[in-house]
Image (cartoon, rainbow, N blue to C red; front, top):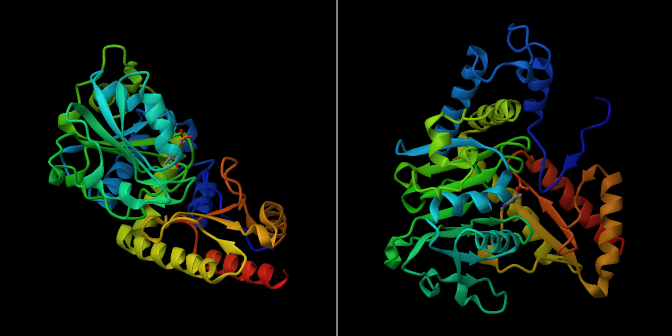
Length: 367
Ligand SMILES: *Cc1c(COP(=O)(O)O)cnc(C)c1O
């Protein structure tokens, strides 16, 4: 390429490791001498079975998923899981919801179609009482407790998962980890079920990963669609219906790339370094700010704004426009919050964040 490839800060679908894209390009017409592209293969054939099993094994190894958890490939994204989780786990009873931002709010609302959601806690920027799980109103009769461990829109991340058992609460924890899966380790002792759409940190859209403790299978409501029934999908090794084969293949390539980077521990260190660089710049800036309490700032999604006195939203629009011509793409904030947002997933190199900070420094100096 003559021009350097721009850095893409999209929240999702998001930037992919460039090595993964070029490997896939090379294999597009002929996967390893098979005479077929991966999109053209039967999902039950020998070639795709090899790809699939390697991807599953690598994900299990990367996230250190214990043997008594099943990894399922599903479809429908995180939003479908907002229905699929209560269909599978609620038994029509109640379920606890901790609402820390837009995504957990959506989950809480959707669940009401299938069970009785309880609002256990709600994030309040002005009073951090909600941040202590000891204050949550956890219903004893709840079938599970839902959190969104990284709020992609709000930029709010749990730095530690809550230990419900230590609080004397028995229901399994369900985590929507769509936008930070693979950027930190998961303590599986604390989790019953984790789900993630692939298009943030794992690969292309179309694939949803569900990791579920085996004893939670077999509880689905009779009305649960078969293709969305965790036990049915688990029994069929995620081949009850045709899985999103190309997305699985691409995710598998990302898993191999993650292993070459040194695995999740190394990627976590990189995420700390990248996010600190950006937050440190924002915090000393005269014009930019991030409103999230330090202890809750996301390492993956960094929303930031320009003070009203420095031009506010209009200035943000100018920022997005100029950043694009400087090779820094998709920095517009989510439409519900405005401002700016840099999503700095695993595939974003440190150089990309350095380039963004340099651009912000120049932008500020010109104001
Ligand atoms: C993106 C996202 C979703 C929704 O994913 P879809 O694939 O659009 O259904 C859900 N939860 C979180 C935390 C997300 O970041």
